[in-house]
Length: 142
Image: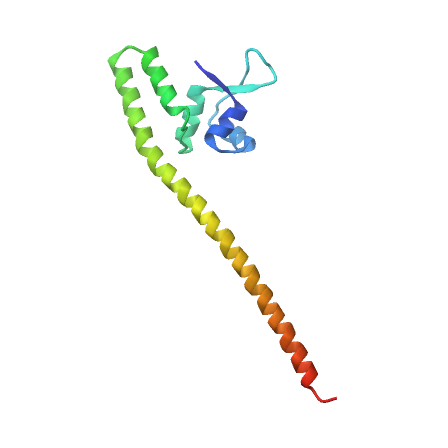
């Protein structure tokens, strides 16, 4: 049984600590103290995997390690079959997830560019309105 600190879990799940604590509470999973450093709070790799499944997250670095560790720990054919099925499901999901993550990054870049363009257009419009106001006030007879 592998244990992982909550900070590592946050990095693997790509969520902030408050969200992790809330999800642990909702899933009725308890944290434990680290055996060598009682300041650290940890969860087991099984609990982390359970959280990832519940919240539809992938564990890119950990997924293959967990399944290979499960295969070596259990020698029964059903465990090997279950681990291989889970491994294939993770590999099927991780490809589209990576693609979606890249698309999200691209969309964020486009949104930033559009916000910049909108700011420039707003500035131009304000300058034009100021110019028209000054021209109108200068052309009025006194």
